[in-house]
Image 1 (cartoon, helix red, strand yellow):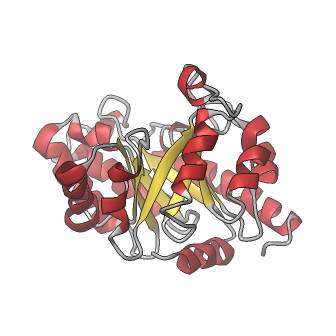
Image 2 (cartoon, helix red, strand yellow; image 1 turned 180 degrees about the vertical axis):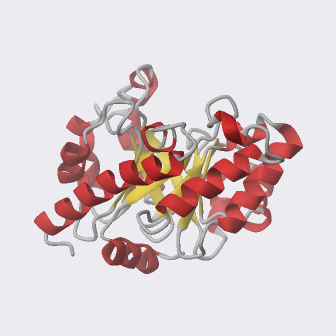
Length: 273
C-alpha cells in the first residue's frame, strides 16, 4: 500500500484507527480456547467486527512467536483473512544489519506480506535500508516511545542540545522519505509533537498508547495531525479485550465505533474530510 492509498483509506473511512492484535491466549474469551486455533478464531471475529471502521491492523509478533510454530500459523491465517485494502503492520521492533536485516525484510514483506514493520533504529541506517528496497512497503521507526524508561535513552542530549530521538528522526530523512517511512511516537508524548512535526511535517506518525495506557485521542490528534491527517492511532487492549462474553464481538465493535466516530468528528473539525 502506497502513501496515496493510505491517505485515501483514511478519507474514505473517515477513520485513522488501527486495532492492535495483541492476542494473548490467556486473555481471549474462554469459550474460544477449546477451538482448534483459538487465536485465529479470536482475531477473525475481531476483524469481522471492525474491518469497516479501521484503516490498519497491527499484530504484535511476540504474542504469536510465544506460541511457537502454531502461533506463526495463526498469524499467517490472520493476515490472509485481513482485507487487502487494510494496512497491515508487523509490530516486531526488529533492528539488525547485513544479511540478518535482509532476511527479516524477506520474512515480513514476502513470507507474511505485511505492508509495514516497526524497527528499532539504534544500529543506524544499515538496519533499515534492506526493507526500503521493497516497493510500496514501509518501515516504522521507533522515535519516542510511551514507556517510562524511554526518557533515559531517547531524551539523551548531545553537544548540540538535541534529544537523541530528534537526531534519529533527522538522520533518517537523509536516506528515507514520507512515502516509505513512518515514526512511532507514544500518545503520552503530546508535549513533543510540535517539535517532531517541525522535523517531519509530511510524514505519517503511528501513535500507540491510547485507551488503556491513558492517552487522550482528541489531544494527540489536534497536536499531531498534518494536512493529510498524517497519523494512525493504535488501540489494542481497550478494544479487543473490552468484553469476554459469548457475544464479545458485538461489544468490540461498539468500542471501536466509539473511537471511529470521535476520529470522524476530529477529521471534520480539521477540514480533512
